[in-house]
Image (cartoon, rainbow, N blue to C red; front, side, top):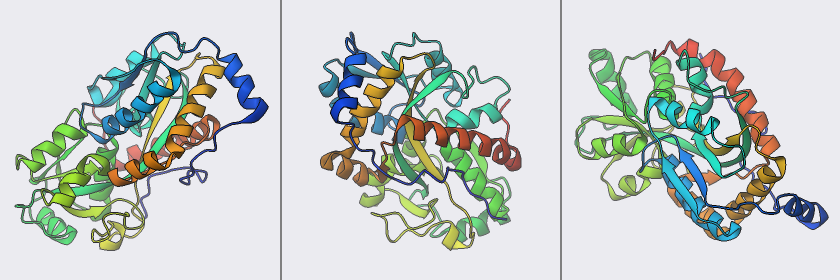
Length: 330
C-alpha cells in the first residue's frame, strides 16, 4: 500500500513575489495604522523544536519591517490544542497570530473536541517553510540502519520506544505512517514539543525519535545523533548519505511538514495581505533562504489564497489518513 502525506498539487516550494506597484500601495493604505502595538506569535509547541526555531528567525526581521516588537510565545500542551484554541479566541486585529504546522488539521481527527475548528476559526496568512522529518537514534543505539530497526521491532513488538513532538504532531503522524508501512509496533512517547524529545535522544534517555530536521541538523552534522532515514520522497539536501524511508524498502512512503501562520478568522483582509507581503519578502531574501536551508528546510512564502487551498486539501486528506492509521488520543 502506498501511504503518502497529502499536500495539494500547488504545494511546490515556490517563494512568492513581493507585491509592488499600485496594488501594493493600495494594500499599504488599507492597513494604515497597523500594527499599533507589539504582535504576539503564539507557538503550539515547546521551545527548541523546529516550529519554534523557524518562528524566531522570522520574527526578528518582521519586527524590523513593521516597526513593532514581535513576541514569540510558546503555549505547548494537548498536541497544540491549547495554543490553537487560545489564538482562536483572540481579538481578530492582527496583533495575535498562531504559528502552527500539520497538527492544525490532524487534531480534528485525533481529538473528540480539540477546542477549535480548523475550517472556520482562522484565516490563513502565509506558509513559511516545508521540511522532511528524520528518524534519529542515539549514536550508542544498536540500530545502524532502518533495516536494523525494523528487524528489532519485529522481534520485540511494542517494546522499543520512540519519541515525538507530541500527540498529533507531524512527527507523530510520520512515525505512525512508517509503522503501518513496515508492519511494526513501536511504543509512542509523546513530548510537549520536538525540542525536549530530541534532547532526550541526545542524552540517551530514549533510543530513537521521529524529529523535524531543523532542530536536529547541528547534532546530526556533529555526530551527536545518527539519522536512519528521512521522510521525503528524495534524499534531503545537506544529508546526502541518509537514505529515504521509501528507498529503504517502503516505496510510496512520503511525509512533509509545513510551518505557517494563521490569524483569527475575522482579521481584516488588508492586515492579512500586509503580513503576507512582509513575510514573503523576508523569505525571499538570500540570507534568509540560506539560513532556512542550513536548518534543513525550504522557504515557501506562497500567497494566503494558495496556503488556504493547501490547508483545505490537507484537512480532507487527514480525514482519511488518521482513521487509516488507527490512532486516537481521547
